[in-house]
Structure formats: C-alpha cells, structure tokens
Length: 253
Ligand SMILES: N[C@@H](CCC(=O)N[C@@H](CS)C(=O)NCC(=O)O)C(=O)O
Image (tube, rainbow, N blue to C red; front, side, top):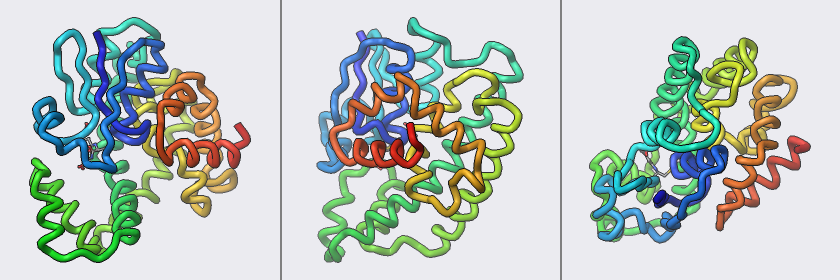
C-alpha cells in the first residue's frame, strides 16, 4: 500500500511522483492544494507536523523529508534501481543531493518566492499574521511573512543569484565527466535536480542555452524525453503542464 500526499510535480513536492513513475510502481496520489494552503490544514498536520509536502505512506510507515524518503523507496520497492551500487558513485549521488537540497534548490525557490511576492496585493500586517499563524515551522513562518509583506530582502536575492551561477558551472563540469549527475546511469541525483530545474532553459534563457551550457542542455533533453518524466508531469493539475510544454517546445523534445 503506497500513498503519496503531495501537490504538483514540481520541486520537493514532485520528487516521489517522478521517482515512482520512473520505477513503474503504482500508488495513490492525494493532491494537497498548496494554493489553498491545504498543507497547513489540521488533517494534513496530523500526518506531517512540519506542514510541508510531500508525505509518503508505505505499509504504515509515514515518510517525510523527500530525499531520504526517495532512498527508502528505492530500497523498498520493485523497479529499476536508482541508486548506484558502486560506493564512489553512491557518494557522488549523495553529494549532489546534499548540494541541491541545501544550496541550489533553495536559491531557485528564493526567486520563486520573490516572484509570488510581487504578484500579491499589499496587505495589512494583521491580515499577514492571520495567514502565517498556522505555519508550524518558525523559519517557514518568517519567510512567508516576508513574501506576504512584499519584503524579500535584496541581499538574499543577490546571494541566490551567485549560487545559481556557480551551480550552472558545477552541472556543466559534472556532465562532462559522466552523462548523469551520479555517474553513467540516471539516478536519484538526477531526479532531485530535474524536478526543480526542468524549466530553466525557458525561465533563464540568458544563462541556460546551447552556447553557454551545452552539456546541461543535452541533459535537459534526455531527462524530458524519459517516459517516467512524461508520466509524472501528466499528474499536474495547474500551471506546471503549460511550463513543461513550453520548455519541451524550446528544447525540441
Ligand atoms: N525538507 C522538506 C521540504 C519540503 C518543502 O519545502 N516542500 C514545499 C513544496 S515544494 C512545501 O511544502 N512548502 C510549503 C510551505 O512552505 O508552506 C522535504 O524535502 O520534504
């Protein structure tokens, strides 16, 4: 029995969707609508007190924290193995996942938050407090308060830009050594990266293009073409589908 509580096939939320479609394992998808803040509802908090998606339940085990959950699922379920057996390559995969979870993806999320903040109407402080009061993790509450108050600090955005630029060089170097991030085969490192960066050729065309990042572009094309990737994106109900279609068109896949 495998149940996935999550939102769109996007970033952390999408990691188990992409991974399970890649493995070809059946599961029940419970859609948690982040637009309606369902991740902060009492019913969801009873499942995952951190109030973040995804949460996976496998044979009664409740799994939170998406990247360790992927390692658990890869070990526990049938289907192609997505962790290299070679100890060096497994280290390489884990080093990539750590870099993505701690540095790269939060930098991209900072821009996502800033964009959302710009689109929001100005709100009174009391209304902002009402909206953040159910967020259980203090750091998350702080970030949401800044986004809702349209006060995302410029310094944070500058640091995020630096990390994104440095990360692009890192992708290019790694993909010169092996076709995938963890080594010769597609692995959890590619899944963790791709589900967050899948639209970068579309959203950052000045930095991510065939001239400046040819190996990264080739990796995008190969990842977008995978049947598991297509099946995972088909689970989207919102804006992800349009963004994926536009990215594929640009890539010619
Ligand atoms: N460390 C957690 C982070 C999960 C996470 O931040 N998920 C985002 C969606 S991609 C979320 O739930 N955001 C809700 C919020 O910040 O309120 C994990 O890897 O599972």
